[in-house]
Length: 115
Length: 385
Image (cartoon, chains in turn yellow, cyan):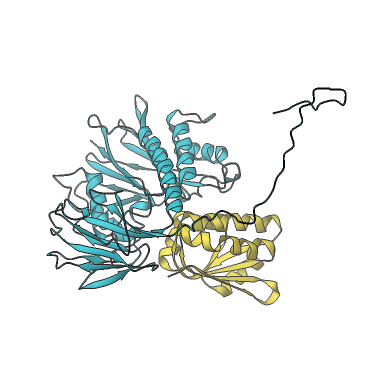
């Protein structure tokens, strides 16, 4: 499945990005510029839906870290949510929640933005 | 080149007048055309490339009369033919009634089928790839391959020799991916009583990731971290994190598993950062012990804290330390493998024919889709006598 990205704006100006497919090196090459522009340039709080992502490699994690850091510098926050078991185990192994909050679903992700 | 200008008084001025004109009839340069290639990516002929065209189909088989000869007992004398139609990106593969079949994208071919650019063809133990590209693009790609090959050789040259004697024995299998995945590993005796080993995996691919992994490996080999006790895994990770922040290293971070073993106490202390567990197999106990500490990857955050843990090691135990390229493979059926799919392979009996790390590589290759693996395969096996 090709890597996909869909951007919407939720209530309160929160950016919601729904990713799909494989977040490996070729997939990240396709979306990284758009992703960074949609998240960091807007400088709004963002929630990232991973429910459509079936593989997450180190380049995908690097993209999340760079964007979360960029947002942090602008006083905003990013939360990941909805990861499938295989992707969730990768997030667990790299202990990514120590720098980016990870939620089970969209509702919890929006709550984490308030926390 | 700088020249002084002639002065007005210079009687022997030698003036050169340059007239530039533009021709309205530009010389005709023939547009570069894409060409078809068949390249071996797995098997004894790996790297061999052969051009074919609409007016020049090629045959593949075991006999010398074929254009692309594969010395493989499972390949028929004349196995299949590859052809192309003028100005079409797809090629056509025709099975020449081979005994063991021609497989396209994992499915046995009956008659003929179109093979797109990048499509894979499997005959016996060989995998061939169809490429439709500009000759100039091909030359650039080959140049990049040569650079990656050099980087790969450098990484390999730094890997330690297996240890066959003493209380701690090691063996490993390392196969870099075609794009180089940034893996590195090593081990050494820190002092009379302490042995240390590690596996590093830098994010991303290519020569940059490989060079970064070499930097980390050199720092660990030479114990070149300031004020660091290399017998303390958490301290080593903390110092690495201070030294290798991603902002100052091209945005690259890395994961690591680092362990220190003392034969006298039989204690293995370890710390992992952004890395999946290593596994300890104890004799006559079926269950594997996962060895992992929950630390953030190295370079992601300057203020990250690192913890370590320890385990007592029974005589005859075997430790498996590896990179994610070992288990993050796509199977022949097209499904994505994860760590849990790989773990049962560790508990299969050792082979009498090949060393344990290579047995594991072959087992993974058996389930993976044809062709080279997507990431480096690094498997370090440590046996505690």
